[in-house]
Image (cartoon, rainbow, N blue to C red; front, side, top):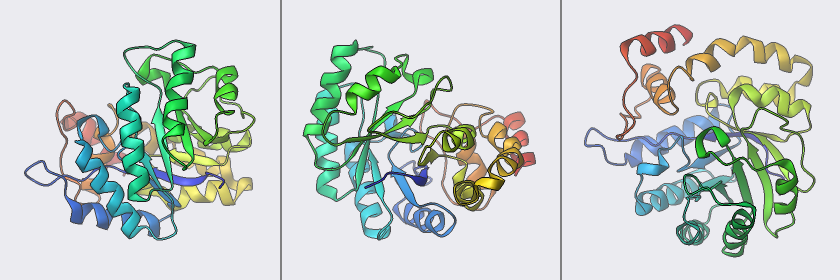
Length: 273
């Protein structure tokens, strides 16, 4: 399968007690798929994966498989512990997801050989496509394009979510996905297949048009710049959760160490909305 289109990295709704709000999660899934999203990434970083328990992640994946029909459900299974990542990948596959997204291991900073073995282990744990996730701004490690090409030779490794602004060029053997909202136009111009996106919670239809109407792509991109900037006023996913609540979607608050945006930050978000 080609991995592409508008894939929204969905926030995880919480109730007033801070627990997973399954009803709100299902409502948001349906809304996104009716408004420009081709598929969903569940329990990724935007979904506050670092503070989700494994059972909560599995429940999100199960809900996604139940609710999303033919739309692809992609499970965020990456950690900086290969054994844990393999276990999550196995559980995601059992839940019936269509693909898994595995971030580069963070903090322990593996070398080239360690990265290769990490992804070999994850890919061997599933028959579903594995999407690499290169985001050096968060994980310290950057996967150079040469290593991405080498990783593409691993069976099941099918795509890369590229969140590096420098040289996000196509890699033979991998579908190329924009890893940041403001990269989508450039990545599509370079032959990319779509993006794993955050602003698509709010402007999914417009972002889908960037794929369908290449002649209007950069005009649409320019029209969304204020929103893209507002959604980066502080660390993701704090701004997008605040924006969704302002827009009438019940997604609740954050789990520490993430906090509500400040009054000044909320004013920026509200103005962009």
